[in-house]
Image (cartoon, rainbow, N blue to C red; front, top):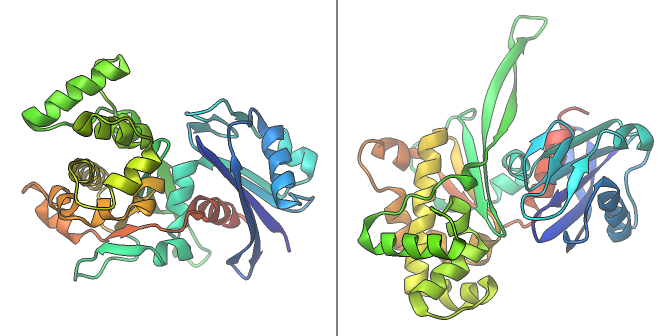
Length: 325
């Protein structure tokens, strides 16, 4: 039986794992984390995988790599890093049965079909029953910001004429679109942030990623601290930083729900929320999430969950490639 090797490469961390795949079930056998900074090309990723796990893909195995950046076929690049990947020579050279490169949040979307999705912490679960094949969505903020959706697709028919469907992950680059600030107070921050960035406007990622959290905290308190410190000191209790950041997160969630119509659920991933759950459970988050009247019924019907499994991208990459085995 073929093993599945997976990598999830972000701007800060590179995660490597080996899964077994038997009777349609994935089982995590080994996982290791390392820095993504030294990675420049595909061979570096393979070398790091062998070095961290003590093993790697063999002839007959499968390899899936989730990358935090744009992906086109078997090539892609890391948005917040130097890595440039071309996987085309890899599959034949290693004798792999399948080799897959996908956007990291396309992988996160596939992870919602595994135990990662079912074990996520409920934030807001409506009383109504969620349709099994309703669109699902995921987003996460950490070093950067990523988002994707998961749609049920029935492209073919079986021999008996029944529709044959599958889940299709749709990546996005919504993190690079302008963030919608509201009101005079927020506009003062928007102007200060644009000046700091040296550009005309701030993106979703500029506002919600780790560096964005640092800038927000500095604007509100005058103190320059790294994101980990801000999380420990300002997102673990009621502070202006928590209130503003939770409001911004809630606003993005509302936008992403309205964009994807993910009545099957929204999963919040990424290191910031996982390490600081108060930013998605406090009143400011929920108030901003449900704000507005035109789509109130839709917003109230969407289950919202927090992904706490920090290996979710690996599970999603393995799930995506397992469908073809």
